Image (cartoon, rainbow, N blue to C red; front, side, top):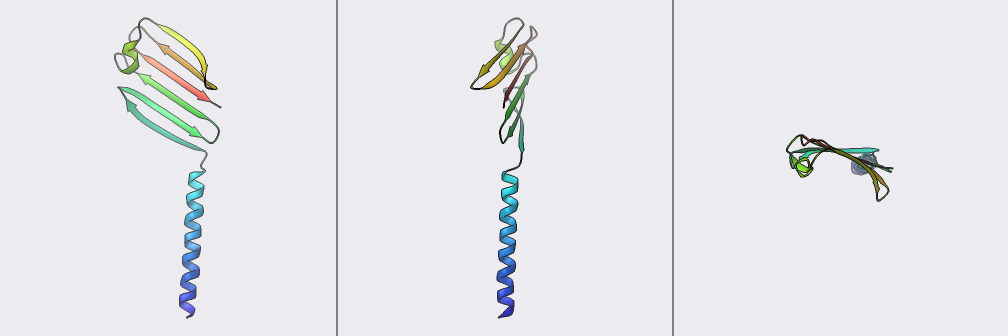
Length: 99
């Protein structure tokens, strides 16, 4: 009888620790994603109260092939600061920061 109660208590403690460990990872400060899309390198960072995104395309890849000439632009979209830069050779960069 005593071992059954002990097993129940131990399994309850193990379940509680697992649950709290899952909560800690779910509430971690930052989460980062890195991947390629359309020949471009994309990095995104998510935090509890902020978001950042960086896109870099090599010449002739992704969004870079749509641009003509060289240029820069900075603007706000939905409370986020967006910076874009493109070059004659087709290189393209974009940064988005939300606080």
